[in-house]
Image (cartoon, rainbow over all chains, first blue to last red):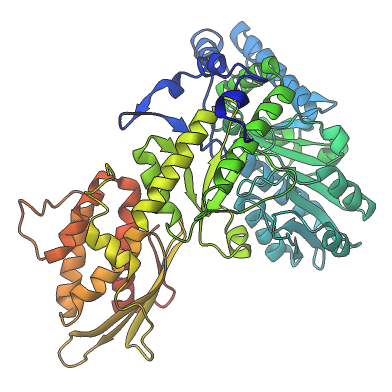
Length: 416
Length: 152
């Protein structure tokens, strides 16, 4: 007997109580209750984050690491406490291993440029996978072109899982970096990042894990994974946009040259020469997004209060429920059926193009993403121009997946 | 059905299901590849322009995209066949103005004929590029843009 929506809800989380924390979710769209299922693109903010940002700006805002007056000292302290909070959230040992960036895209660009400049030379190899976001594809492609290095790609099987035996064959003494995601944004696959890291390290390569999609769904422990870099975005984990970051092992950061240069990343500047500050300051030139850092820290407090294990359990139950609903729709094919998945359902229908699909879903108040999800190589691999993607958060209810499935069926009938 | 009849009218659905002139023209006098990088819509437009009269003798397309982009391209090929290049360019300008909401076909003079079917697009800013890709690609072909065109 398939679960009814009622039996899924409430077994691990009080979802109605959680929804009350997110003011935006109570609105209507075109006269119907908003069903927000585009959480892999961006997540909404709980009142705790909205209020914290407001209070910080109203009462505590100041420049950081510069001023010697009270307001600036206080803001600096809060900013560095936020760094500690992020470090604890990802499981880093030292808070100085966290570098703030505008998000995952900039984080990966920072590593590709800086690490690449120091360690990647002609004939070297970088390994990515066939299911990366463009943010973890293009920076490495460009780096390889610039340095005369070669890009290797881990293939995926029909279910959307990395082919680990092929990965093992790609690794060699030429490999400088393995850059893969923890969770695929297009398919939801959870990759075996610890194993990937162990094998890369055995070959002498460094590892970057793109954690944009995993940070909001999985309890993180970068030390257990063992990776050299781990990137994330605030706006995908219930915090503000314009903030994210990258964890990096202290000893690796130490070896890397700056990416963006300017104020605040220096030791000493004369007109002839500049010496650089130690990490993380070396990689944070200019005034950082101070308010956004405070907001990110508030989002982490909120997630910690609920507990990442509980969040993962609840989202897994949503995924199972939603998957069953979609398996019952004959005209729809789920793209990505990995054994380990985060709460993302990407689907394709021959009857309706995904842009028409999301247009019709919107008529029913259902917000989903249609398109290639900034993962065109993934779409090419599965022979589809685009998919419709429902990505769930812990504030979603099974009833919302019922609404989605009904709307999808109605849309297919309309176009058939 | 409460679905948006303004946008997805029967004619559009019909052209989506059975696109007209959906083929390549071998040795076309003009052709162009057009993409919408945000959504991945991807079409190629082929034309044979009569050098003497400057008329479009043949017009066809191939590719993939949503119903709006497919129907828009299909209708464009049927509408422009036999018209002059100059006329085609003028209609493109009017079509573009209409879908952006800067030309009201009910109140202003135009030469859009059945293409007014797409007037409803102005209510959906995120879909205007679906309807305009065909026309950008057509102009790209006429202007001999060999590298292709993009809506971005």
